[in-house]
Length: 168
Image 1 (cartoon, helix red, strand yellow):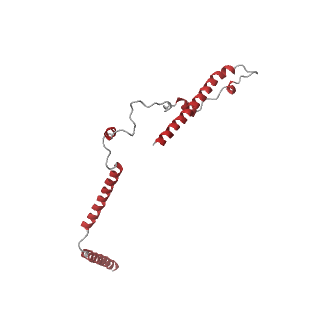
Image 2: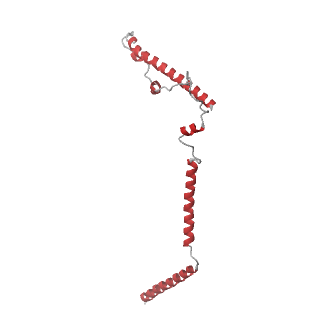
Image 3: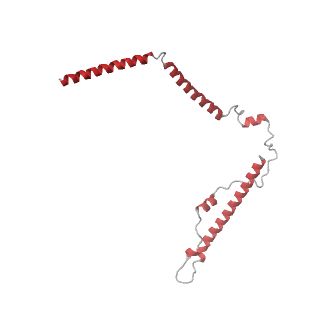
């Protein structure tokens, strides 16, 4: 934990130094840009070349860096005299800060178990429906086949009777 804090402080110092460097470079460019047109007016020759003497305009990233809000650094930070050590607070104060005791089971675990329960219930209902709708015996299949065969024979007889009348 301490190493992570030290790395974070070093990162803050480096980024603050980079911001300061970018700000000073942008400020020097701005001051050069404001003074360059005044000095470039007296050119030798017939044409004035103020565009070659003037500094280039700031790029977008430079302008963003110039106006970026500055984060406070930890340089010169002094811990208040009465401040407690962050790891030496009593358990009751920790729970007061955490707004109660932490949950026994995480939200992710509870969501996973709830989803598993819902899917399991759906599969159980599906299986129960198939079980309830299953016929007791398979004799009805043979009866339906016999009915279908009898109907086919009647239809073929009617077709044959019509063909016999048309042939006469």
